[in-house]
Image (cartoon, rainbow, N blue to C red; front, side, top):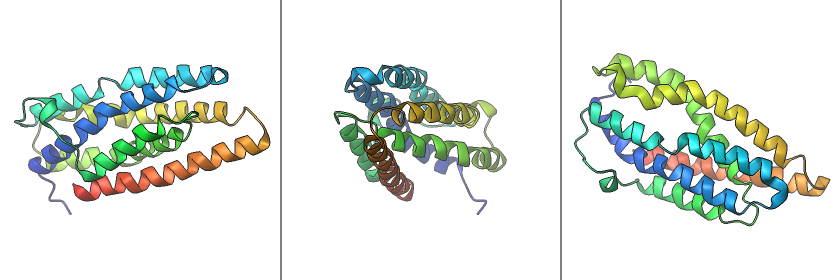
Length: 192
């Protein structure tokens, strides 16, 4: 509605920073549970986790640059939707074959790819903030397309192994997880 404020931006970051901080942790936890025949998937997700492990620091810098006053990341808390999403992703990452996480990754990376190109110009227009206050969003707006390409490669690895029935079960698990994560992601936004 054209009324987005700096306080709205700060509030979003206060809720989002702890969520972003957890992402590489549940990815790393998941790959530790992968069987040997999925070593290629292990390496792919490990690369993604390494690339994103410090994203929360970049977002925290954007928060301070935009005028945020909370000094320690440890003082920030996810809202109830974020808590539910985080708990769900950590729980799935402990599965013996945690490939359902690919559904969650699709929702998280895909949402960024779809909304940031529209959101970032809107924020720039409505907020009187210097460009360096939007580094996290700019980075993800440019890179989530590449991340989705990596996700497609991971999907091809998962769906190329095993029997037809195993492949079908994996595809259904990924789709089911995507639906659950989409609902929890929406809940997280509603609490904002």
